[in-house]
Amino acid sequence: MPGSPHLEAGDKAGIQSSHSRYGWVILGVIFLILFIAVSSRGIVTMYVRPWSSEFGWSITAITLAMSIQLLFSGPGGILGGNLTDRFGPKNVLIAYLLLIVIGVLGIAAMNGLWQLYLFYGLFLGIGSMLHPVTTPLIARWFSKGRGLALGMVQEGDLLGMAVLAPFLLIINETSGWRTAWFGMGLATLVLVIPMTWLFIKPVPAKTSTGTKSTNPVTTPPGATLRQASHHRSFWMLMVTTLFCGVTARYFWLLIAPIALEGGMSPTQVGLTISIAGIMAVPGMLVFGFACDRISRPLLLSINFMLRCVAFIIMAFYIWTHEPALMFIGAGMAGFLTRSSAPPFSLAWINCFGFRSIGTIFGVSSTVHQTAAALSLFMAGYIFDRVGSYLPTLISSAVLLVIVSIVAWRIPEKKCYIDTPEVVQPEKAQRLVTNAP
Picture 1 (cartoon, rainbow, N blue to C red):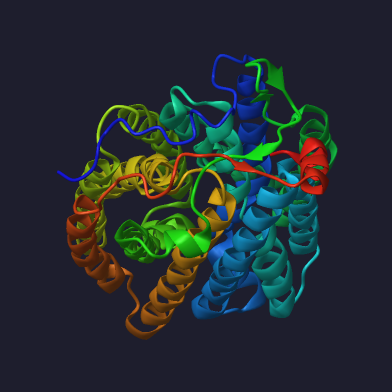
Picture 2: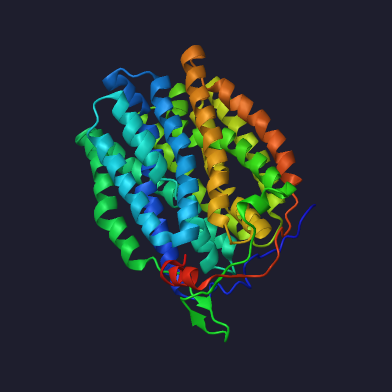
């Protein structure tokens, strides 16, 4: 098996570790951001059929909005990652959260399809792509137990879907779907943004005397995007990311329509969403804990093979209309489709360090989301032509077998010189203020 299972890039870069209790405060705030604000991106799955009935929009037209959201999230990730590398995460997070607020409140007031494309596609597309901002921040606060910390925080939006779905169903029936979306936007505005402003802080660094300081004069070691692109590990990770996007993202956005195709009631659909979201929690924790101890490529390979089984089970559900199969398949998919995030994140960090990791995450997120957007649109297009998501599930299962083999062969090794770069005095002053 290629690669060492114990690489921890950046630990010697003067970036303070998990010994700082404040790292858990940072983790909690980011979890809240994902739980309340970013979960609105996935909650849209509950409204595909209601919007189609109320406004007369086709499934293809609505899934096109989801594809637009994924397409804009790619450039949003690159921009956010690059700005974070240069200026730090706090202001970037607040700016992106304001975009989410505009998008969610705009959806609450929409009456036309173009408004769905604008507010969900553009504003939520850019604003919800926080992975290149939040992942480097958490990784730099936790040099020990880094995988577990990433697993704990990255489950936030899925757990938000699981917890909020039953309440939103009640609000939909009593006050209408507009009230539900208005409530999500208001919660982000009055709770999440103020907490982000108050509690997100720079990562302490070590001075030359070994004491902690928030005024670093070096940038952490690692490869630039150009340097990283010269290594085979970079391109194998990118290919794996692409296939992951093709086979995973549409599940969370189409889980409700897939459940309805097999004859489930609205209550059973809500239960399916909750099962998937809840199962994401142990999935993130298990894979996060494991990737601190064993090879990340091996974990990715295992994840993709098990994900293949989950998609086959859901395909059998559509074939047989047996609700238990959907509960099992959705639970497995929930456990697996997002738990690949910690192994992916650590593989990128261990191979290319922290110097430009926000930018690298942004590029990889663009590849993932662009692939997801195309697969999502094709899933809606195929459904409108043949009336079923069965072809999409079967083709995804086949692709997952292929990507599991590619992932297993990724050479996870350090691809940079472990020496911090001394910055110029004027840049050092900027880092003093904006260190991520």
